[in-house]
Amino acid sequence: MSKKSPSSPDALPASYGEAVQQLEELIAGLESGQLPLEQLLGQYQRGTQLLKYCRDSLQSVEEQVRVLDEQGGLKPWVSE
Image (cartoon, rainbow, N blue to C red; front, side, top):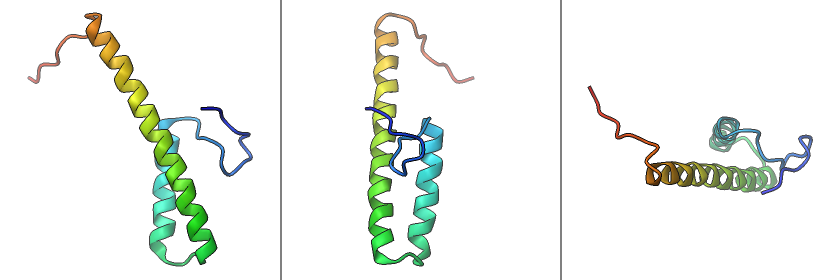
């Protein structure tokens, strides 16, 4: 997954948190009902890109946790 230039509207976010923030902003804009049809489509497409980025990021972290767990690097969490 390569990043595009930061000035590009399709540039991938710098972090998972930034992607979630952008998604929240997109959702607010879509729900407002104030965007022209062409912008709605573009915003929807951007949202799908951000959602894929978030899913890929989460999957990567899950795989890292699984590897650590298999290596015995994690101890079970016990709620007090």
